[in-house]
Image 1: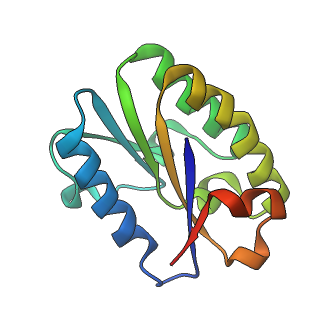
Image 2: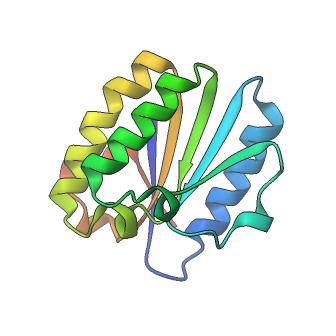
Length: 138
């Protein structure tokens, strides 16, 4: 399952993502992963949440981001939830490329049984129509 949290900069997307991550961490019998572009949120996450900083691993672009996530799932079979902050800053501002990434991520999510929540700095009308069904506007 994939959910997009949409909103413009400063709308509360990261706060919502952190709340959802805390709830998932408390409920999970496996691992919860939080991916962000830089290490800004290090002290905002539970010590039980695995923080992965994309910049530290040279992850830029949607193909690299997919490979990074797929590698995590391959190396750790019990990841129950993945929260991805600043998706557009990591992957790029091309909304069609974002849609392609989400469509590629969906079968992985299904196969490994992991829930994905991605924050996207955009309004609902800015994303492709095919993604609007999985989007939540802040």
